[in-house]
Length: 108
Image (cartoon, rainbow, N blue to C red):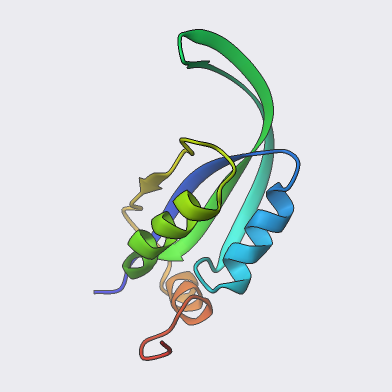
């Protein structure tokens, strides 16, 4: 069964657009939305804050593990966010588009 997933990844504001573009160029994502945000988080016992970009990555379910390996290898953070959301429903036309724009069957 074909499925699409949404993956959330935060990235420093600097370099986020290039990082997102590389994901699409690598065909690991059909689309990446870039949402500016301010984050407050605890890191190594201290409360921190940063300007970040939330990357909302749309990909085919079968590519999630490869996408995760790529993000962990290429991301500037020591411990990058990587949260996978599984939609209950994706419109058939959109799902086809995601499948076509990510690595297709037999394209490897």
